[in-house]
Image (cartoon, rainbow, N blue to C red; front, side, top):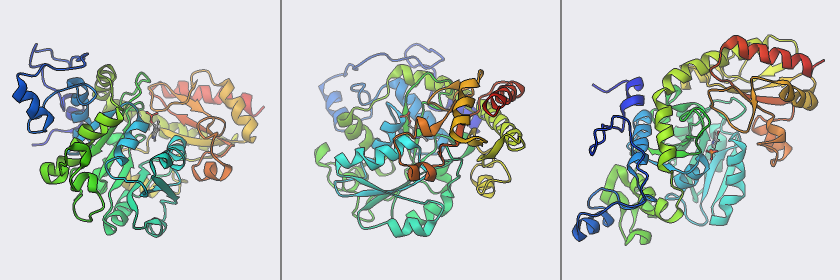
Length: 426
Ligand SMILES: *Cc1c(COP(=O)(O)O)cnc(C)c1O
């Protein structure tokens, strides 16, 4: 019998510490690990035996977290990284070569649009941003140099829900992997691999840790993609010069991506998660199901309250019947439409800024997925460096404020919004 999600959130990837019996996962604050002898060392370096060498590659606390997130997402393996943005580079790294591109959604988190439009060009990669609500537009953007599709389950901040099944069908028809950023949904609300995703990326900074203490990321591999079929993924399915000519797919099958990410990706890019951060995230995940249940309950109620308020123009929460994504949300995130959305205050930009300044319980921060309720005016902060068109496409126009609804008492959250709306629209 497979264990349930609540059980996995507490137990997956961890056993009592073999050396001490410690019940909680110890923080293995060590850089290196003593080899039994020269033969043992050689076997580890040849990937003939799995074990610990050096903490830029693997560390027992970090591995426990990777295994737990892999179990929650239903993946074959996972690799932890120093941030969500590091996870995105690590997801693309084994797939891409200079001259290749990723076809990605226009509705991605602003930081990702920035990373994809400018920074990855320095590696010789590029991104084509298209409307992922339209499978035909995705198919039309794919060319011979495309190596992946990339979208978010519930888009930050606009509350658009991606039709993962339809997008995965396009990816399949073209023999390409689909990468899904599942940060805002978490595996509690959606398991993208069950909808056809190949890789799932997370900013562990957000709901997985859940209390704003960690910067971290995770890439989960479904283990199901055939890297050898098309000849387009030589790092994984041809002799890899960066690892003495090993063909990872031939040698490691469904674990090819995970092993390449550790043996080459972490080794050479060094975007490693630290054991302290992994420990905090493991603690956070133990209560992920309980927190997410309250997050979505509160978010649904706050969204309904705001929508009925005459001081508010509109609310983008996909859990509302008025949302164009409402029916899709029922299929993709049936347990609740997340806890992140935007709403438009009557009075535009000035009223938004006033609202943010008058909120007391809400913290004005560039973060989401905290137990605390958070607010930000995306247009003047996280999406500031984008053009007006990019902002509008991403659902971050200047007249909207983004809320990340916490797990406080609902009446306190609403009372705070009520008094700030009064001040903002006076
Ligand atoms: C925050 C965020 C990221 C980036 O994660 P960091 O941990 O801040 O690097 C990526 N995608 C989404 C959807 C995010 O919310």
